[in-house]
Length: 148
Image (tube, rainbow, N blue to C red; front, side, top):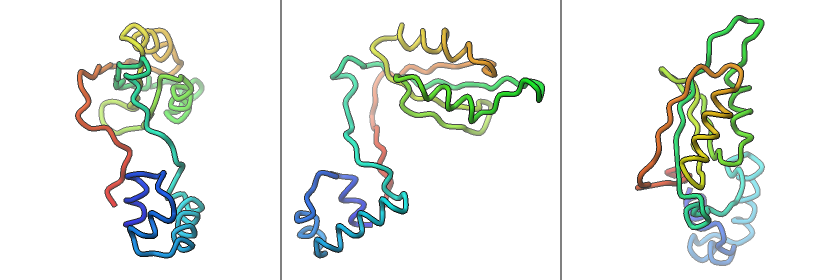
């Protein structure tokens, strides 16, 4: 758990640095990291990019309701999430419980870009009943870390 915590904090640390911090041999750390990857505990190593510094300052969450249709015309939530996921502005897509069926997180260069994606693309998808968009004013915390 300590190794996972260290990797979440900074995955660019060398095996040597991790070995010194944790008091574990480098070979053991290397083996553990490979096991974490093999077992899917670590999905991938990636950079967390500040979208606002690259011209994508707008974050929005979109709730999507799936239209009840006949079995012949039915579109599954999984099919809709895959279709929504294909847009580059979309960062995360979840199937959720409650009044809404799908939650989408997206980033864009301006409200017009977000609005166009929601109105012209997502709302037009077969199976989408309605959407509700929440624009973010300020982000207090954003992380993909798991409390280990």
